[in-house]
Image 1 (cartoon, rainbow, N blue to C red):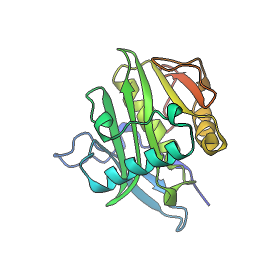
Image 2 (image 1 turned 120 degrees about the horizontal axis):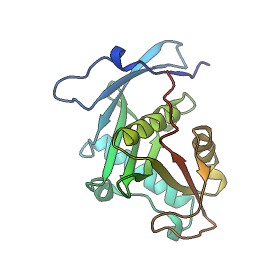
Image 3 (image 1 turned 90 degrees about the horizontal axis):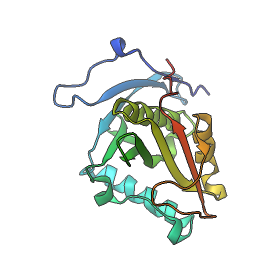
Image 4 (image 1 turned 30 degrees about the vertical axis):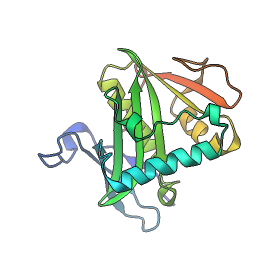
Length: 196
């Protein structure tokens, strides 16, 4: 099954409609048919029922797999904060993933709420989403990205994904404290080179 992701050079990107200037179109191999599907990154859309449902699913799954005091996911109101940049990933009308980053300072931010729909996992969608969030943060002047995730077996695939993309374990950042249920990671955006 082919699961690599093709990123187009900026000059080759198909531009979105005028009413959605912040959208970004990419293409990905569809594992079950071996052809290409078009995926579209769209900002915000927290008023959409499908997006709200996936945010809820993300929160309930994370809380169910970790201690309550170690759960730090953002709910809908938290994701609507002006210091949060929230993205959705779509294939036509089907929502494939959500993700966000929260600004901590002029040059630092935290990844939040990354979740890929189960039916489209193991196709490179998580990597595609993570690359997009890093690019978006870097374009906004962010130099260091942090994240907090769980330390249990349920979170191991996510930790492996972050490591593959240059994140390394670090000490607690911002308002976090030492927590045996949490793993803290960071990476420099300055060292990020987008794969084409």
